[in-house]
Length: 255
Image (cartoon, rainbow, N blue to C red; front, side, top):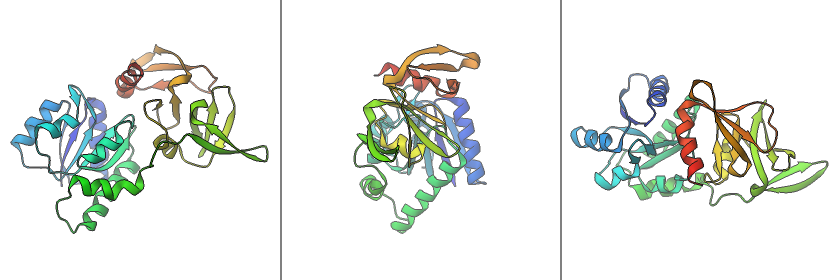
């Protein structure tokens, strides 16, 4: 299988290639290419790959610009640190949409989606509109406005606008409000991430999803990491790794 990887962070791109190789050993993997212009040049000069893993934010622009400049026949797994581009991604040649940080599990699931969709059309070329329709059932119709919680023997709802952060520990997902209240919710952190608006929430790592409203200050930390301080207490330091710091600062600046 010939695979192309587009990723503006070189370290992240290499880590992604390593994960892909573990899931699909024997694949021929090109990249990581870091720029829209490099991707256009590569796709113009080479045969279409069987699959593209494509970061949405590249070094010189948004990867959707590639589709404006060249016809891309290959299916695409879109990769990013935040999900505000999800609907637009599926209007391109999207097979899946995965959030950073990547894991072998999410990469394996992306290949499973590719195989499932390929079976559905008998191996024929998959038009972008058909991809969108096939994936539509897996996407939330709209972002949630509140979460149902059970507290002190009663059910109540917590407005998304009142959430400071969501975290997972020992397989239990908990949301914390701007006033410091803590409530367990019956969904994974991945599910919660998909169900809130990426314009206002950022997935720091595998344990934490934070709200823009709760950010008090951001400091430079060791090893090019960022230290996030919130308006409410957290049990541990909230750090953004150097592979996501650029995306985080961009997200912060666009609010």
